[in-house]
Length: 233
Image 1 (cartoon, rainbow, N blue to C red):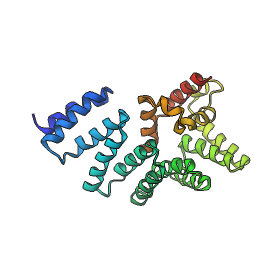
Image 2 (image 1 turned 90 degrees about the vertical axis):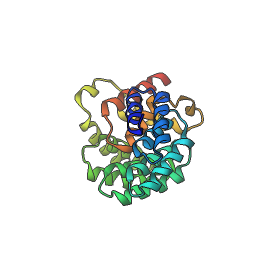
Image 3 (image 1 turned 60 degrees about the vertical axis):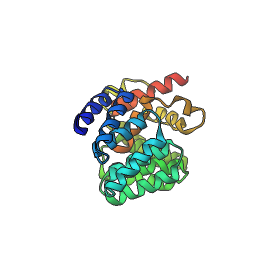
Image 4 (image 1 turned 180 degrees about the vertical axis):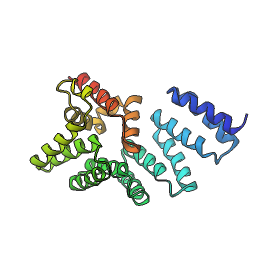
């Protein structure tokens, strides 16, 4: 069987969230063609979903060596570095992704997320502001900017950011009660503590991947972090 056929089988299993099976097929494809980009990326993402971050990083390294100007590969490796607890390395990748795609708002949101965790709060606010300028309908960027503005003591600015985020939430989400984005996002900040490392699940990884690579489905985001908030009570 050709690398292309193994690739499509792997993709089918990946889409079904059967990551161990997808990994096997991507590996077979790579054994047939070591430079098959789709299979290398699929294997990296399969490792990522399985929490095997060092192996995922190795595959992203190879992809970046093959296509050094692909900002998506850099961004994906940056996410993986972040989840592996290496924020300094993650920031280097996000800096490069911003250089390659300076008009992509998600590159700034990704970098802002890591800057905030590195205590560079003003840098995070600046990046969220740039992301919002490029995509004024990104409610998550408004919300996250507000959270960082609170940490800087900019209460009035934070409330304005929250107000703008609330205005962009679809009406169906407003029926979820008091578990707004602000409340649940504050809870989700704990995911990089030692205690919360125990709850890294495929759902968390799915959310993280979306946050860093594209504008995420807001309904899924609220539902996910809302469930984590309820479970923590």
